[in-house]
Image (cartoon, rainbow, N blue to C red; front, top):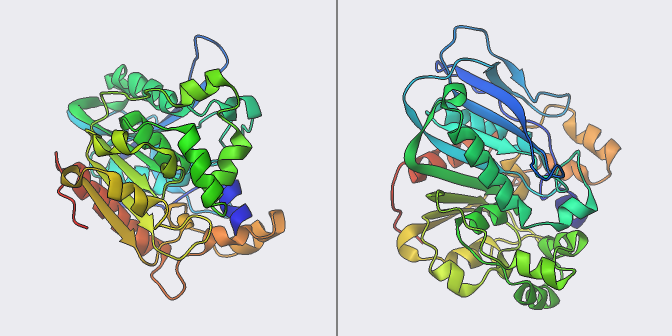
Length: 349
C-alpha cells in the first residue's frame, strides 16, 4: 500500500461524467515560461453558452470521463474561480469530477500539470523545485484573470484553491502556510512510516541551502481567499505560527479509512488542530480512502492497474462496506460548495 500511495499521492487519469442542464465549456492551453524551462499545461472548465453536444473529456479504458463542450463560448457575468492542484505523480484529470461539478454550480475551474511531479513529466530537477508548485498556481490565476472573454470574468475576492495530497500542501502554501524543512526532518525521524516522508525524500527539495531557503520562504498569493485540502500530506512540516495565523478560511477534508501510510490523525487532523478555529472546518469521511478523491473506476480497472503495476488496484478501493465512490464524491462536492459560498467558516470539530 505504501508504494501505491507513494507512487500516487495521486496518479489516475479521469473522472465522473456529470449530467446537468448547464452547458460546460472546456479549454486546454500551454502557459509559456519566460525562463523557458517550466511551461505549464493548463485546462479550464467554465459555465458556457452553447447548444453543442458535450463530449467525454479524460475518458480512458480504466477511468470514467467527464462531459463538456470544447472551446464553448463563456457565459456572461462574474464567476468565482477555483484552482485545483493534483498530487505527486498525478495530473489535471484526477479531479475532473470535481471540476465539472463546480463548473455546473457556476465556478470557473482551472487545473494544471505540475512539472516534475505529474504523470507524464517526472524530471527529478523539476520535482525538486517543490516551491514552484504554488508559483504554478499563481501563473494559472494570472492567466484566467487575463482572459475574461475566453473563460468568463472572475468575481472579485472569490479565488479558491483546492488540492489533493501533495496538492493540499500546495494549496496551504499559496494561502500563507510556511514549511520548515528541519521540522519536517524531525517529524519523519519519528513517523518513519508516512508516505509523505518517503515522497519528500525522493523529491529531495531541500538538498542545498539555497533550495532549503526557497522551500521555507513565503509562497503566498494574497488573491487566494479560501482553501480546501483533500487528504493532504507533508502538513507536519508546516510551522505552528504560520498555521495559527493563517488568514484564509480553510476546509480540511480527510479520508477516514485506516491507513498506516497517510493516517488522518497524523496529517489532516493534526493540520486542522493547528488552524484558527474561527475560520477553519475539519471533516473526516469515515468510508473514504486516499483514492476516493480520484476518478471513478470502470469495470475491469483493477485488473488493468494490477497488470501494469502490481498493488495499484488499491486505487479503485474505498472503505470496505461503505458507500460508492460516486456517493462519497457527491458529499465532497456539497461540502466544498457550501464552504466556498461563505466568507467565513466557524470550526465544527
